[in-house]
Length: 208
Image (cartoon, rainbow, N blue to C red; front, side):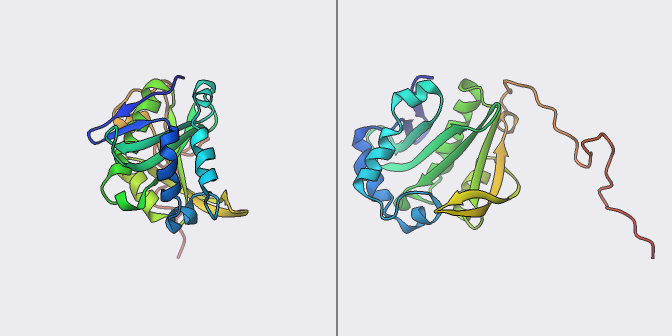
């Protein structure tokens, strides 16, 4: 996959460039990012340089990592970054963070939807996964606004600073955005067991 540029009503999304280092470094001084995102603490300029380098075209061509920066127009300020990595057969996991001064304006949701549509239509993704540590309500709000459905809690599902933490997990399918899936799926009806038997939604009856 060659590096791409996506445009939305307000944003331009593209792979990182060396000119993004300063704003990435400044954004990652935010304690809220350090709390939830596995960035270095303290976050140095060299860390920003390494992160931007990870967006090298080779990683795109190898299909191992797809990092994008979201800006308000081609020359506007950096408002968010997003990263997409393979996560098993036909699935990819997406993560993101928004710059403190640009939160609450829908930019992260707008960017997330643009990347999701691209992944479903151009990358062959059939299931997009989002995970975040319990309590990261801002990230969850963005994911849900983009149409992700929270499936539950993974116990000790993610590592953060040497600790395993419980995390929410959610998914987005092409059908959720009105898009065809590269691979048909057959979700089980609610209340159906995997052995084909029907479950009682009301639960078992208990004798008085």
